[in-house]
Image 1 (cartoon, helix red, strand yellow):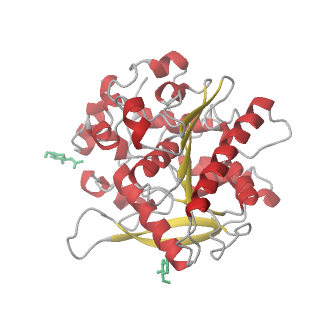
Image 2 (cartoon, protein in one colour; image 1 turned 135 degrees about the horizontal axis):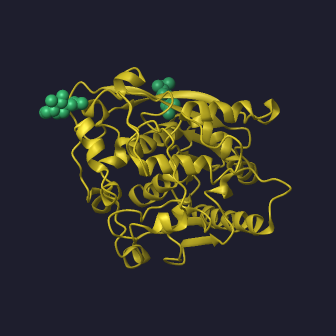
Length: 371
Ligand SMILES: *[C@@H]1O[C@H](CO)[C@@H](O)[C@H](O)[C@H]1NC(C)=O
Ligand SMILES: *[C@@H]1O[C@H](CO)[C@@H](O)[C@H](O)[C@H]1NC(C)=O
């Protein structure tokens, strides 16, 4: 697989190219596969959508700290974009649930557009729905604009998964405070890299999120947790989509090293590799033993047609960290809006996911002391 480099932008991390490409190619099977830029793909997705179907989201911006892990002063900030749909919400008084989509590597509208399932279940559960944009994506650009944000290793050094998770945590906490909805339970969602974020969000911030649906989230695709070639075993196509940079995993992922391409990226951007960091930070080794007693309330959904399934959790870890695996499924197809043509396995899969969410919420409301 070749690595295309372009000035000022990172096209280098093939694994992330793939993440994105598979979003478009495998998950959709639509004519918009293989676009050249993230932005244009999302715009194309919107253009192809009939107006009446454009989800009714309101757009907001939240002032985020650029660096959550320092107390130096003054602190730089940037505007994080988020989309909200409140039309089905049961409200703060009733501690109506909040569903949070953990944005991944593109502008957030794109994920709102392709995750119609969330709107359907928001209606079902009386939930408020938020799509939070990932830092360094879409409009959520530090340093004022994309050119400056992606300028060099220094400007990119705040692009990490830890910072992104802290963004979600602070955003949702402040958001609940503003709505006087502190009692409302938050459930997290995400597909692909967003699914990884959602799963890690539950593990790192269990006091903020009661449960997570992580669709097609290859959280084990690091170091030697799964065989290096597992992805290629499932898919043999050669993807070369230009991919707007996300260095957050670059500095952490051993995978890139595994195919010997890491140095291209690092020599261009002077980013020092931390090949073992992601496993140190988020775990993954002996995941069954570790999470069996420690974690809870995560659904890992996967379709075996999806090459990323090889790096995901395909077996139940405990009675509340469960794997929903479909033989026919593709890359987080379960998050897409349902249609009349959906095959029965997909309908069943979504029902199982809904049952889990219902169970988490019931658990939560049982213990909630309503004053
Ligand atoms: C909460 O309200 C404050 C004051 O109006 C505002 O600055 C902030 O952005 C709001 N938080 C969110 C998450 O929108
Ligand atoms: C990377 O570091 C080298 C040596 O320290 C320097 O000459 C070069 O300009 C740096 N490149 C970038 C893109 O910052």
